[in-house]
Length: 145
Image (cartoon, rainbow, N blue to C red; front, top):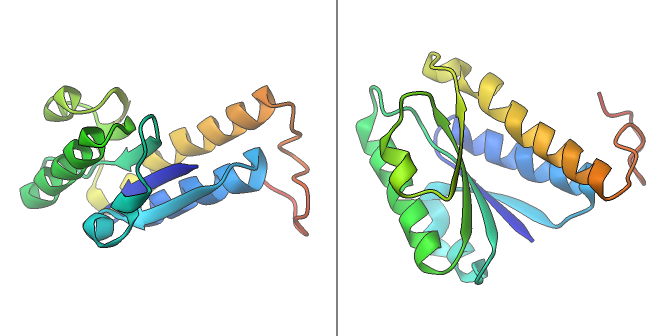
């Protein structure tokens, strides 16, 4: 099982990342608002659990950035493996995440356009590695584009 966390514009990205992993790699995944971590999702964290975190820009809304860094610390303290998507130049996140994928700096409301892509690529590559046809997922009545 894989968890995805995001705040503000990162929350729908977390939902999309989980959906893609379920749809094409057939792995149980759930997306959560990072602010709700202590109200249930944290109970799902096991040693070695992969957790993707979409980190908001450190520019502007500093408090959101600090809160997500705190979320990363919380899941790592419980043994989670953290894979983080952050904005280029966000040096603070390196100290807390195991793996960081950087996207170019962009206005906040456009950030989902960039942060969704690494999650989609991850799901597609994992599905391909498992031998699944990502263009024809099972039990879906639509084509995936």
